[in-house]
Image: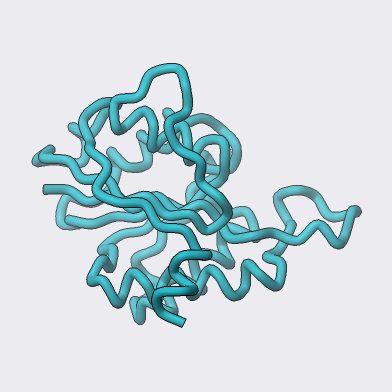
Length: 171
């Protein structure tokens, strides 16, 4: 069984209007929520073997803070430019390219692609079935033997979690 964790980047800052969108960092709340989601994953035993993330600053910060809180090595992270505002198909391709030795992988990216990816993988069609707030996390599972066999409609939703609830559960 393959486990896919989809993590939307944490809350970003809009303070500096001169910054290019790619360079926007996390806001204060994002700096709290990213490690909170990592601690949650560690606590419930869902630690990815492989992570692919958008290289945008807010996604990189989210990924690194989450990995640190999970007590994992940053060597499991792969930065993928195609996850910066391309399409849900690029997100599916990134999943299909996960190393075969990985049983659990995580994708860190942006909306609306995160919601579209979760919807597509779980068999949704045209309408988005998920609302993922910043640092929202969806866990999908598939009985696919190989990552390359994961396509739209081949996964089922196991659970979804948001930082506001995690804060009440583990803080």
